[in-house]
Amino acid sequence: MSNKETLEKVQRLRPIDDVFFERLMENKKVCQEILRVILNDDKLIVKTVVAQRGIQNLFGRSVRLDALCILGNGEICNIEVQKSDNDDHVKRVRYNASLITANKTPKGSDFSSVPTLLMVFISRFDIFKKNRNIYHVHSVITDEGMGYEMVNNGLSEVYVNTAVKDGTTLSELMECFEKEKVDNTKFPNLTKEVKYYKENKKGVSRMCQIVEDYAQEKADFQRALDIVELIDNAMRNGEMSLKDTCKLVGVSQRAYKDAKKLLSENEMIV
Image (cartoon, rainbow, N blue to C red; front, side, top):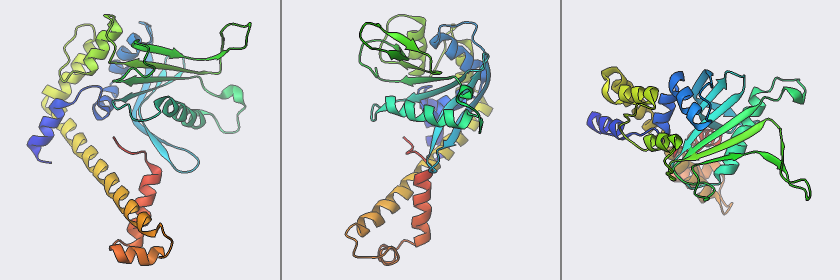
């Protein structure tokens, strides 16, 4: 990718793009501003935020979290953005929540030490297709005669989207997520940070490097996927050993094993 192409790509980035969102969330004030609107709490405090964090499960597979926060009340909050409606994202949220819970629960502690966790999922699509721009999901008792009684198991989920526009402040914030240039006095910290990465020389330079690194990471993942698919397909009939198959297709066994390891440790980059 040429310098001109990289610069053009940076200028086309929007907050809904995960590579840009991760950078914006590094600024605690931006994260706090966004969460205050989403959670309708103008006193909410973000104590810490870690962008682009990887967490592994017991089998070595990891997920990359866009932004993992600790709120002023001690609650853990994970925020992620998703553009493509190409998977079961409700189960994706559940899976990520389970990894965060296991990672943040002290070893040897009883279950009362399981942390309270809030999962915030921001998407370009209305995930539940009910024509709402925000949904709050909790566990409830649904037995006949009991109505809907909430169960406090320490996990809550909030789904927000940019697709449904209803004139609220939240909807206005979500519109900013779809824009290449943000200039809204209601969201001064988001506006300032977007301008830093789009207009400030140092900010633009840093974002260009991040975009190039991200492109290389994606290319490495695709290369690994191609190697594994090529060899696995060739071995599918079971008539050739791994050694002979690798020799036939011109790929070393080490390259195949390294590719398998990279795929097992990372989710597909989209």
